Amino acid sequence: MVLKFITRNKHTILYGISLALLLFLLKWLELRFIIIDHAFEIYIGFIALIFTGLGIWLALKLSRPRVETVVIEKEVLVEKNAGIVPDLKELEKLNLSKRELEVLQLMADGLSNQEIADRLFLSLNTIKTYSLRLFSKMDVKDGRRRLIKVRS
Image (cartoon, rainbow, N blue to C red; front, side):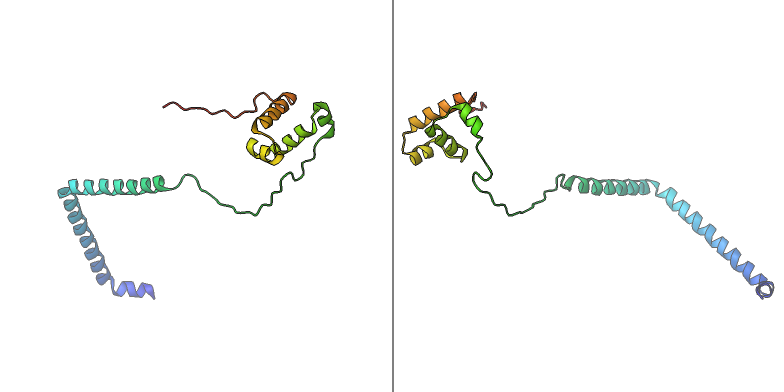
């Protein structure tokens, strides 16, 4: 059936194929002459497309945050001195007085020297003396905070 169609319309099919080849040849020649005549503009267009793509890629890469910050919120219950049990053997070795032990516990609670003095109804100098004795008994090298001056 297909063979009969081809044999009957052989001249029409050959004429159509030859017209298609001629049209393809003419378009190819036209395109070739356009490219030759406007080669400089075509090269500039390709270079512009390459640099545009490179600029977009670079902008996306540089504007992306380098560190992602994740915020996690949790409810935390903190009790002072929770789970802190004094070691009685170590306390006996240190040979601390009752008042020194009170000062040490208040220091462990994070109170300042002035707050400790107010709570124990003692002077600030007395608390500093107790602190120095505690530091010497416990072999603390430097119990004071140092202020470092930055020179500009």
